[in-house]
Length: 130
Image (cartoon, rainbow, N blue to C red):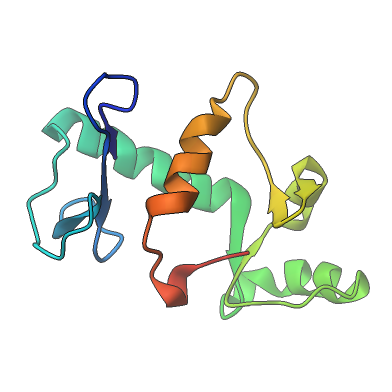
């Protein structure tokens, strides 16, 4: 969650420690290691969880999922490595290439937010997908 990005006071970037909206959170900017409760209102938490599930179903497949064998075959036919988490082959054509990797953003996205998040978000090394 990015709070006060467009305000005159400093922005605050929060993230879930365990990728669980209901689990502990920390502040990534300004930098702290103190665990806090989720800063999102309950209704927003439910919607975030729904959107996260929808995104995973529509965009990702997992290497160890037996239902992903056809996706893995497509990756191999295009000489792409199959990682623990992968973007569905039907979505690859929606990505654009830039200097640091592949990306996708919806029309009207504020790329300044992406720049801020990339600068300050302390990624969990095992969760980074590039």
